[in-house]
Amino acid sequence: MDEYEAVRLADHEGYEHLAASQRMRISRSTFTRLIAAARGKVAEALIDGKELLVEGGNVDFIQTLHLCRECGETRRRPARKRMERCPDCGSPNVEDLAHESERGSVRREGRQP
Image 1 (cartoon, one colour):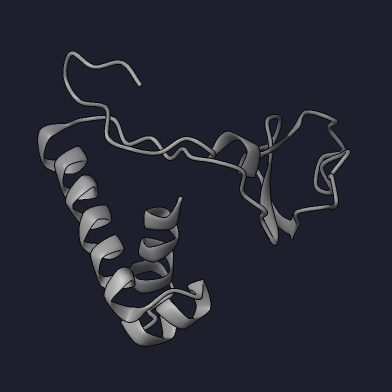
Image 2: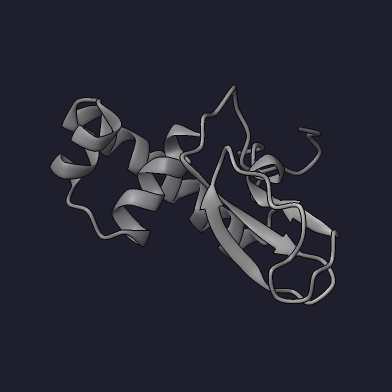
């Protein structure tokens, strides 16, 4: 999960290494090692066609993403607020994607996660 967060902060949010390391409350050198390891796994998944799984430990999300399985709409919400019905179509078939994303590394050939 630390590698995932490093990629999210640096590559998705555009933070410099120092600012990202401060947000994660780790040293800049530790952040640099995390981002290098994560980028290597992402590259391996893309180039070699391997599955990329995100996993590891208990995670406390500030926000989560809810997906309506009926209409396909997504909504970002505070993690502690469960969306009971889709605000767009009213369907109760709504999934909290944060709980689905708690997996993590590259699955290597011949190795089960």
